Length: 184
Image (tube, rainbow, N blue to C red):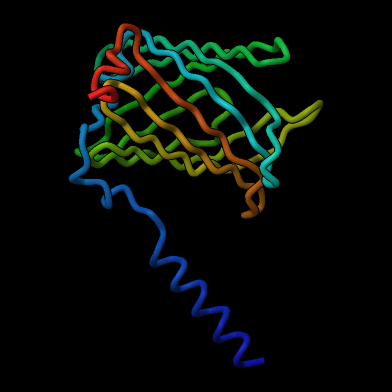
């Protein structure tokens, strides 16, 4: 019994030490300037996979960003593959050299963001509509800016600490030279 307990504690400690941190990306380029990237129009394409890897939903998102009095407002218009539409309006504040806070209607409290180099990590809880009900879930949401304005976003979704799925999105800016460096 003691041996099992010590093994469990060891796995938890080692697992906690190996978790990815925003600071791990401090020297990665291109540097992700959140306000500059989302100012104006961008588009994203995404999927949601359940914990077994089964594709559950596909969607596109048109995003319009505007900075007013130091607050970034992101209006996100979702269109899902089944025809459902949804709009989310984020309000994002830069709270420090590397930190952000964000809110939108379904978020519980505030989303906390931390940005270093080309990476931004958001952590938040939200009330997610599922069928006729709502589930309170937590998001560990990572964004990685790539060359030519491509932004890769992966979010792990958990309920009661157990992963229930993963959201993957790929963002692009209009008129971005997406293929110029890839061909070189």
